[in-house]
Every structure is written in C-alpha cells, then in structure tokens.
Length: 511
Ligand code: NAD
Image (cartoon, rainbow, N blue to C red):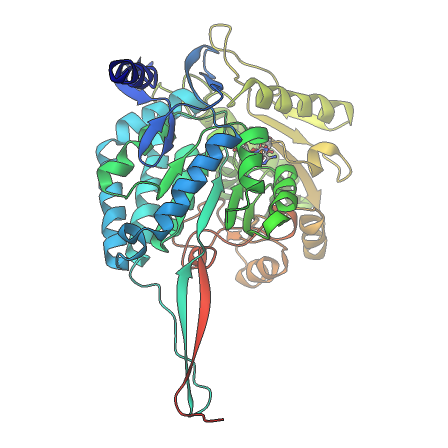
C-alpha cells in the first residue's frame, strides 16, 4: 500500500509541472498546481484552466483551477500560519529580511518571469521586464516598511496610559486582474506581508502562469508554509468562494466595477474589510496654452501603453476648442510613428495583442458602437492579425465625440481613445467630472495657477499635471466614486493591511 501511495504521489507531482520552451527560445519548468502551504497540489475536483497565447491563439499549457474545497484548504493554511509563532512572533525586521530575499530571487529570475508574462499576456517583452522591476521596487519598498509599522501613545489623563498597536488584519484574500499579473500581485503582497498578514491570492484565469513561477520563490525566500497561498481559479468558483468565505478577514480586489460591486455584496457576509480598485474613464485635459508636442506624446503613452489595458488609462481626451484640430493632428502623428503593433517578443514592438478573444471582441464592438453613434473614426479600428492569427487591433482614435455616446462614457480597456472638445475651464471641469468613475486624470497647461486649480477640482484619486500614468510605488494609488475604495502603494497602502488596537492602562485611578 505504501508503494502504491508513493507511486501515486510521484505521478501527481509529475503531473503538476511542465517543461516549456517560450517563443523567445527560453526553456523552463513551470509548476501547474495550486500553491498551498508552500507546496503545489492538485485541485480537488480536477478542474483546469487552459492558458492561451494571445499572439498565435495556441494553447501554452493547462494549470489546476481551485474550487471551493481548495479555497477552504488554502484559507485554513493561511489561518494556521497567522497563528504560528514562525510568522506571528518574528520581528518586523525579520519579516523585512524575508521580503528582501524574495525580491533578490525575483531579480535573479527576472528574464524567465518576463518571458512567461509576455507569452501568457501578450505585452511587449520590454514592458514585462518593466513589470518585474515594479515587483522588485514594490516588494523592497514594503520590506523597508516592515519594521517601521508601530502605534503611538496618546495623552489622556495623568492616571491613564493609552497606547495603540498596529496589528495585522488577518487572513487576506487578494483577487487580481490579468493586465499586470506580476505587478498586481506585488502591489497586493508587499503591504500585506510587511504588516504581518497571511494571504490567499487568486490570479485572473486569463493569465495564470507567471505567478506560478513566482510562487516557487516563496519557500526559497524562507516564508513559512501558509503565509502566501496562490490559488488559480475562475472568478465564479474560486473568486466567489473567497469573497463569501467566513474565515477571511479582508478582501482586496482589482478588476471591473461590476465585479467589485458583486464582491462588496458577497463580502458583507462576515463584514470583511475591503479595498477595491476598479474601472475608470479617466480624462486628459489639454488647455490652449499647453505644450502640444508633450501633451500628444503623454496622451499617447497614457492610453496606448499595455494595449490600452490600464485601469488609469487616460482614455477620454478633452481638448480646448481653439487647438482641437491641431492637437488631433499631432496625436494621430504620434500614434502613427510610435504605436508599432506586432509580435511582443520582437524588439521595438510597442503594442502586442489584446489579452483574450473576449477582450478583442469587446474592443471591436466599441468600434462599431462609435461608428453607429456618429463619431468620426480618425484612425485604426480594425483587426491587424499576425500571419492570420492573434488578438491584435490597430490603435484607434475617435474624434467629434459627444458626451452622450457610449464610447465617451464606458470603459473600453483597449487601444482606443476618444477626443472631445471644451470651451472654458469651467466647461472642462464639468466634463471631466461627468462620469461615474474617478480614478485618474491629467491636466496639460503651462499656467501653474490654472493647472493646480483644475487638479483640485477634478473628482479623482490621482491627477497628473503635464504627464499621464507615470505612477510610482511610493505614491498612493486608488480611486473615488465607482473607481474604488481605499488606497494601495505608498505609506497609505499600509492602512489597508493593519488594524489599530487601543490599549487603555490604568495607572492609578481607584474606584
Ligand atoms: P473581472 O473584474 O471580472 O475580473 C477580475 C478578477 O476578479 C479576476 O481574478 C476574476 O477571476 C475575479 N472575479 C470575477 N468574478 C468574480 C466574482 N464573482 N467574485 C470574486 N472574484 C471574481 O474582469 P474581467 O472580466 O477580466 O474584465 C472585464 C472588464 O473589467 C475589462 O474589460 C475592463 O474594463 C475591466 N478590468 C479592469 C481592470 C483594472 O485594473 N481596474 C483589470 C481588468 C479588467
């Protein structure tokens, strides 16, 4: 019997990894299991996710997909780790050391990680390397915080000593999207681990691969079993099971506004602490005194980078009437000369394919909507496959867009920009704020008074003045209105992962 059990174990383990050769020739072994308690395991019900290369529509491999039973196991592992002295009682400095070690390992493996990211997601290889750098920066930044998270003493009366403790929130579920799989994982893991929490992280089903390779580095860095658990799975199964789980204390989500609202409802079952980072239709305002050359280049970066799949994409450009035609001409020129669409592994490619057929179809349906509603298609709008395959779409620009059009109001999440006009500063602010979203915004003007005034009046979590989307891991990131709740990154990102306990000490009051 022991022999049978051992044979079965080794055959399962053999099933749970795959040797792969990426399109750039790099070879590596990828685990395909669920990562629970520092081990890769099979999904109980045997469900899998098939990962598709969006460049040629071919299968890369299959990975295990968690169901509710697997989520139960991962949550139990995270709960046990939270109470285990190996994690509970280590100093902040030692937590920081584990995180620094983890970052060093990520750095050593950065080319493989970037290769997997580009293969699975379709983003240009140079962008994937940039994403891995973001992982390093973010993990190291929060590693530095790990021994600087402390409470305060609060003077009250002479007979009382009051101090606060900053404690971990507990077991945290983290649900992330497919547009920046590695970077989003780091944004979530960094602050959670620095503050001493344990985690069950669910990647998006569209991009399950790079995080599995990242998971192999967690035990190597020395994290005790159960501190980080990674459960690939579908939103409706694994995601829903996390949101409704009674033994999860906090849920952090990045993704669509519709799913964010659903999670909020489900998470109310045990009043989970929540942070949400959801959609946007972020405006970019160009005033007539702006440096048009710079404004058009930043506008291009702000919407066309990462195939337009950026929650803070400045996808709604508002230009002062007097310079409208000139700006549109400049922007079209920048798109033409810079937005090279093609194989994401080829150097010089600016734009790869959309992540999935669903996203590709979605973007093309917005092109049809724009045309039927009477906006002017001023560039792009068509598929541009590579050897007849792949989810490639030309960078698309619609002009003469009116504020009642669907393409003006809804998030497209693709290389798709709309350009409308405004007359006055007041007009510009009103139009910028005429949206249910409030994530990012950009203002272009050389008049510092105007720029700061407009920045103050825009309803959004972030404003860039004379740039777009140059976010930074040291700076708070998040939205207002239906773009989210809470902040990630920077010192503000710690607040989401600590719970304040007040301790009242009687130092002499007698009854
Ligand atoms: P989504 O919000 O449905 O998925 C994001 C994550 O949530 C994934 O991990 C998914 O598995 C999970 N999820 C889905 N349903 C869930 C549920 N009921 N409970 C718990 N978790 C659940 O997004 P999508 O369907 O991949 O993309 C649709 C649109 O969302 C895009 O076109 C885009 O507009 C937007 N989006 C925004 C971001 C962002 O960064 N803000 C990222 C991805 C997608």
